[in-house]
Image (tube, rainbow, N blue to C red; front, side, top):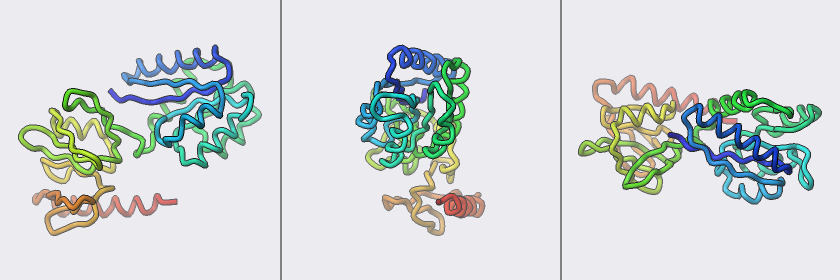
Length: 243
């Protein structure tokens, strides 16, 4: 089960509680685990977002004492926060301003539970790759591994070793299962025993990918030409996606 972190920022407690209830209902219906943190002002939210990637989604009221929701969103973006921003407010007058902050949606109160669900479904579908995580049970606890931190996964002694930027995690899950759970175009099944994150490939040898930590990950001999081509195509797509 994936865990999402959602921030709700509104100066009215009853609005925060109502929105949190709708978010939890949506999460249950989608089989998701969700952590919701509520804030009564833009200043509180900004203080909590000093870790730019802590929250995936934030619901923002616009009319609040102190910083408005629009100004709060501007400051979030300026500090490097790339979470999905959903405005939840009483007026339609700030629709154009919301685009300046790359808002994902603009809900006008009173909104319905299905309006919140629609907005969250869209945000989940368009969640930036680097904000996605792989929930994994390993070494007696549940971990949330950011996909961006995974270099490669290999099968060893009937277990999967997940090599990340900071550690190697041993999981009792099959590679097919992990590949399906990750479900990312940034990952390439280059061998029956290896799944590689192409963001961490530094080069290609004759029969291996050379990884950012110096490791050599084998490329299947039977599919070497198509796998090398897949990596080259991916690098071109990434180059075109750069702003």
